[in-house]
Length: 281
Length: 234
Image 1 (cartoon, rainbow over the protein chains, first blue to last red):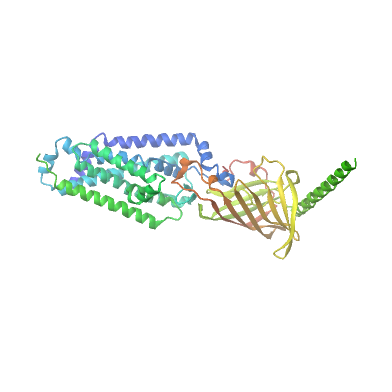
Image 2: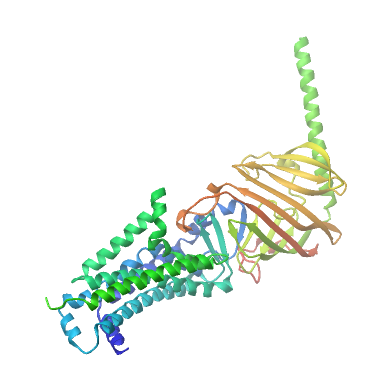
């Protein structure tokens, strides 16, 4: 535990750790202010086709919707912010030449790598919670509360309503799912960080895999569709399913299990690699 | 000369028949309007149940205010989707000045003498694309409204009535919707995922707790926000 807090202190003492938090704050504030100023245009674009057939009353563009919208827009960018720390946490010891000093001390390699991994997960969780808090708090201040309308296209075009009373708990579950998804990216970057001697390689390597998997998983060809279930990025948007009506628990459980297995496997490999790492040469 | 007279005669006969058909059709609508001439306003609770694969929503409730001839106000504390066409009852909505009407056929429906009318809007710019009505001529009630297929869409409303304040007013409207996929959904950036399918299904609208001719003021319908409500039409 002491090692864990020591790693936390080290990580949060570096200014670059806060780049991600600053970036998220900036993007969220900018997006929500612009959405507030363009509320009429957004409402028109959101509802133009439904207004042909329905009279729509109530606060549709509320803080919950804005939060879901921003989450949906940022789920591609958050992995990059996570790799900034996760890809650096082990490799930076090699870069700065402190790895030998670290491993000469009494704590075992297993305890050190576990503490570093837990720190990576702590940072990942903190980043996603920060995104959630800033989105929701600013969203509710600027747009107020209300029922959540989600306009889904998978597996069919449909609108899902989540009653206002249910939205906070659904959002909590959605953000927990987002943390779970980002854990895989963090674990991948952590593994690369264990393998590399510098920080750039793990960051670029992780993002390259995430981007390639996203692109391959979204190509509208049968071959790529066949590959899609084998790509972890396919399951990373399962947070959206907590905002569906009704909640597809089976699908969520399946996605969570696949992502969990990925995280465990990636950490296990990192654990084994770090324990056999040659620091003499 | 003889040919011209013959042509004029045929034209006269045809136009007389056409006028006869129009007058006949409007006779049924006039009887309905006459039946409800004493209906100045009504207030009712409305419950909307969606049975549409593309619209996953719990039942929605609201209070609906209507004042003749065409004022409508919906009061809901929550988000409320209400079908624009066929969803609520206005006995004065089919005005002679707005439609051309003709009788399609006479039939017995549900043991009642009925007639089917086809209404075509005179102003083609309006959103209403024309309708087919089935009218129970024994009770002078519109029992079915079918919005004529246009842009690939179809809406059918079947209306059941009950007695409230001396008037027969809807207790249930069953709507069947069939909307093509190109019209479904909003702008791309507000959608989650991808795909495409025709939206079809049923909307069950139940009316209860009627308050008829309570003397609703016009101000209720002009206020942007109804007192005690966050509801605003979008």
